Length: 134
Image (tube, rainbow, N blue to C red; front, side):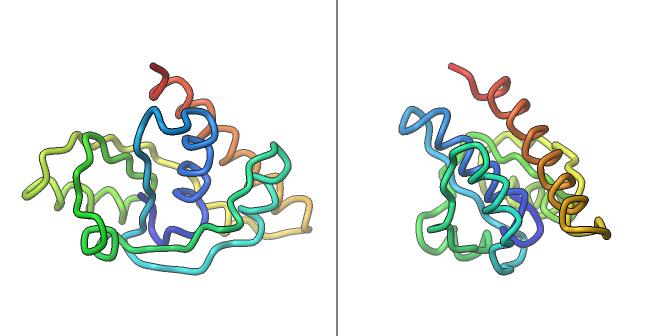
């Protein structure tokens, strides 16, 4: 879960699905709903992960569509973390907070901006493969 389900959580969802397939159930959502970020898709494409079909959703939409039957909620932004903690009032899920920089805050050349997204991608990949390995 992140702020808008546009950058960090779609990256995490795509990588978890890529590395673990159907062995675990993964869905991402945002505290709010944004638009998919093009740089997110670009840096995932660089490592052979296609997330072009991702459609941002809020946690409220996810709850309405599927219910919230999760064992673990990983929050990646302060806003998402507060929302995840609120959910534990009605959902018996463990919550972990992985503070993750927002690469959209980086200004500069296209390459500098892409590098910020790559750093987020690579950091999430390390954490996901370590935390979720069978």
